[in-house]
Image (cartoon, rainbow, N blue to C red; front, side, top):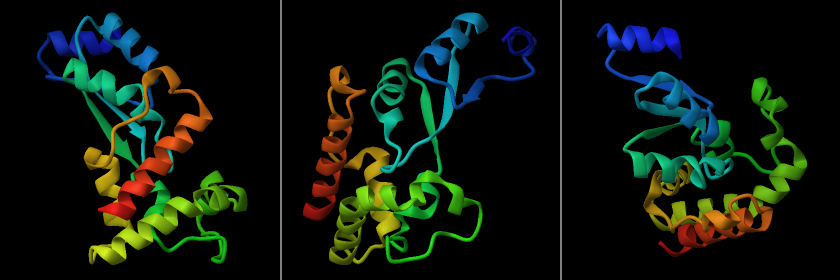
Length: 165
């Protein structure tokens, strides 16, 4: 962080951001920088919601920003993938999200996205983005953030929200 602190203090940049930092690493970077690290760009979607439990609350509390990359789970949440479709022929075909087990686990969410999209003259991708951007139900408590069952419950609640709105 020392080189970044130097260019910040010289006025060459106004803000610093990071990519793929855990909460602990983000805080450590801020201490080392002696300034706020304004953004953390991370993989974040309904298919990979981990940032929702730690990073988003921290960013909200501290006036920071979490930037989502791959908010549609590399296309998984677009509504065009299922167990009955071939895995993508490009690099996404090697992604664990497109493996049969993951597709089976994601099917209730994908079904809910398709149903909500049909009910609202939208695409599954539009519904997934609306949910990821914070217009769906609240997150699970931080005390249960690492529990797989609470993550499934959060996804189920959000897929239920998708089906109700």
